[in-house]
Image 1 (cartoon, rainbow, N blue to C red):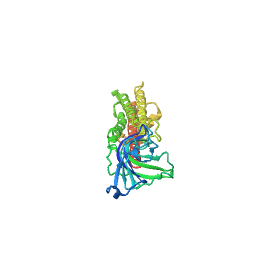
Image 2: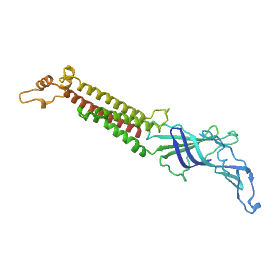
Image 3: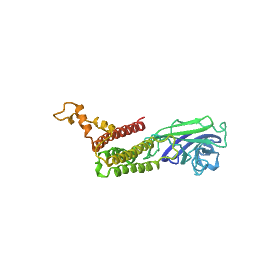
Image 4: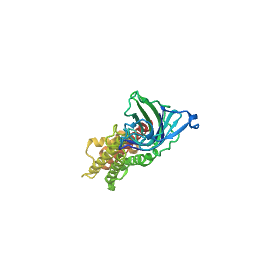
Length: 337
């Protein structure tokens, strides 16, 4: 037996099925079909219908749809040589079950198998022998979404032939349509801390970013089964970014609530010390000789706007640091590891 792969039609990650077009190259010797060519005008081979001679009942046991004998639905003819060698090329569209592993989506690789057995015959009556250990791809038509990485063909101990196809996703399309928008939206999160407090747009801006992640999460979820195991890293990545965006909304509401509360000067000692940490030498005028004196002067005249400015700086830098580290870890982990 040999397996010829003609095309990969589709790999449905939600249903967990692989659709492909393949041909089994089967040959065996039938002692009842031997003749002497000289007795029949030099005829050394003939073509006969499937129904006229014995052929094995081959089944694909991991078939996703109808469980019927493979190749018998098409009335293809068999080639028979004068010394009893029968050659049969059953081919069809195959749809087999294949559990997807989307942990590294969209840089994922999938391994799917086609399991062929001869039902109605024991392993001593019908013995499989493979002619090569890889799939024949001489007539293979490439797929735009999936590429064939490697393949194998082996005979199992229970009289079963297993064809294994290792395919990898063409990730450029998903990178342009999914990943790049996620990266861009993620980098927009900290920009809310650059908006003026009096603009009145901070909460609406951060809320819009939060809603954008929920939309992206819905789009990605349509490509991934609901019970995917393990959970794809991209889902965790978007979920963390959504949490960061949600925390940003809460922080902005808290900052605005504090800023517009009654009173102008800061009375809390903790907030005063927080602002004094950012005091630099440019706060010192000509009559002051030390940072301690400058901090003491600032400590006496701290306003709410000073606290808000320092909070914006801290959260802006901190959010960018977290997002960049998170995005780099996700990209390196899924693409190169």
